[in-house]
Length: 136
Image (tube, rainbow, N blue to C red; front, side, top):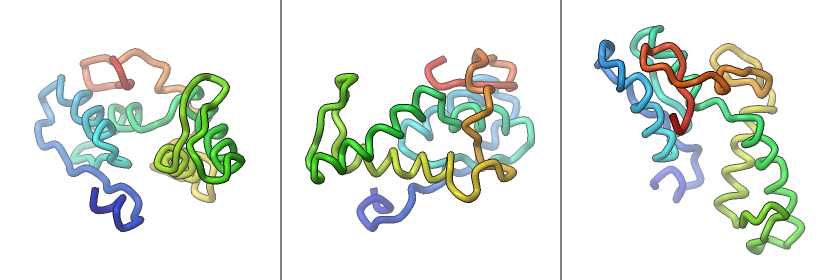
């Protein structure tokens, strides 16, 4: 809340030291994203696929994010109902802008930065710590 109130980017969640807890490999990154953290620190390379899978936006999320800022701006900074039935207001439009800045901005494709072309998020969440996806 402090970062949002002061106009800063959302923080990155701290590490999870329970490396051998298979459930935590998926649930901890999922919970961090739910709390609006922008990422999660890793203690071990084994945690990276889970974290990456949860924080990499899906193709659908990118399509929605591209539509929101323009629709919001066209409504002269008032909440607007999008053609798909969703509403976009200032926090939603700002979140979409942040997502697009990371996905398509100057650092897109850099090591450790997700890419809109990656498909790991389409893989099923496996509790063996390899890949997780939101909602699994």
